[in-house]
Length: 486
Image 1 (cartoon, rainbow, N blue to C red):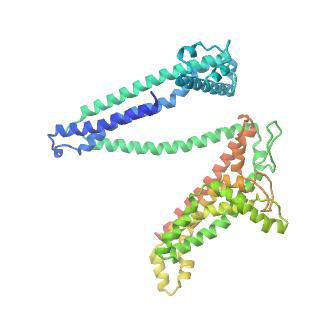
Image 2: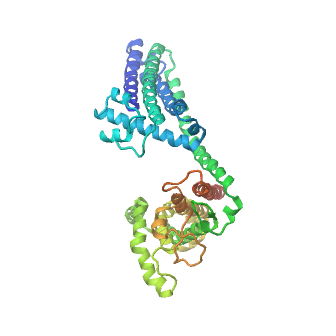
């Protein structure tokens, strides 16, 4: 039984539990809800929760544990040399899963039956050719061990799915029956339901936290593996980026960091003035009618995909800067440059900074404006000397968050700035950022355990720390100085 079908059955049982629980509560109270401790709907929700939540949690745990358990069992069919090498074992298990999927597809199409699958013998038949006749394409020839493991994998998965369905449905029915038996006029259904909902909300928060921890751990563990193979000092202080998968790589972090910071600074020089001035106009000078159509039009920019911005940088901004600035000034002849990527990322960040700054300026108490105007200040003097200083902490936080977004941009940099890792002050030269190299090092057929691939995780961890520090600084600035005006 598939997971989707199982979830559908659980949802139907939960709905039936709600109806039955509510009807039973009303029946026990003689049709008078006033005799019940809780509203009738709470009894229904209690039955629905008992029918769905325990079974759903067991199913989730089963889905998490099952792959590890099955892989441990199936790996015993592989050669000992493969089992001893983690990388070889991982690749072999991928072949096993792919072959098992191909056999299942052939079974669904009717081109193979269970008897034909059981009769397949890698020692006498090329399984790839055999499945090729059935329209199933495999990337490589299949060994006898992989074929045996694939057959066992299919059998184990089918058995596990049957037991999973039986256990989940039995638990759901048991929970439903138990909940219905618990129903009584003095049963505290509301307290039970609210307690369960509170725990589910706590679980949702915990999942978000654990996801963050998992992301950090996945990067940190591989970063540690990288630094075991490559000197940490050469990474953080190296001035050359020249990865070579055959050996002799120079993986200096400084050129990528310089390109990232250079593009980010240019982006902020574009986004901060335009975004801030737009926010000041919308918050202090624009009429309600003007604000009603200008603000949504600015925020539409945030909804444009970054790949569209990349095309805009590649076909419009880059050639314009090359033809009217770089070539006449003798600074370069390429449309891909730091300036191109920085300007387009700045345009991308305008609505982000504008919206945050607008909300922050509107949050400044009106009494400060009234007091300044009452003392004889003009509108512009009030904005410049009262409103902006009061909103400055929040604006600074918005700028730092905009910087974090600019640092993490990838597509615009790939299409607008190129992929050259170099140290240069010329803004019309092609450079690149950490995010671009992370994608580049993990793309293609590479050795996952080589320093040239693992460096992507070290770059990702470094980028994570940089953006985390910027976000923490932004939050600290906002919280520290906001209290002065509250």
